[in-house]
Length: 227
Image (tube, rainbow, N blue to C red):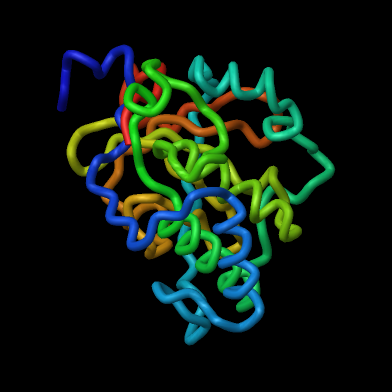
């Protein structure tokens, strides 16, 4: 674990392997429309739905990340919590296909780059409009596309983890009636939360604009700073 940054920074994983880099979100949307119209995702198919598993549990409130707070001030609708929405998604073959399609297409169309290299700052959350971004930017775009496709935003929560390298990382947790699944820019496979090998730190609340602790460690990073 990189102790020099751990208390102040959340590192996105550096071992992403995107296959094709796009130049804008338009590339993602075009490719996604083709996938959803029948091309299918390469990584996962409709051969079978994932097995059911127990969801992760929260253990109280947690401090929001500064980058998230600044993002929410700019894009309030992206962080708003509508308690009339479903807090879980009914998993169907079509939903599974949509999740797999969005995850694969965004991963293959956005180039992973640190905020320091991209913008000259330690951490900034946003959409990868120019075809580049770090981990949270990937996941924010995925959630936007999934919400635009009709899935409830309340059931799709930005989540902070410690990855297999001992570094901070942001993923998108999709809460379904078959358990919680993780969309990740480090891999195209969508896995149940307990099969990723990650330590879960905190995620956005489903009830208020804020975060809840997932009990992984007592202290956690406060920014995201890598790919």
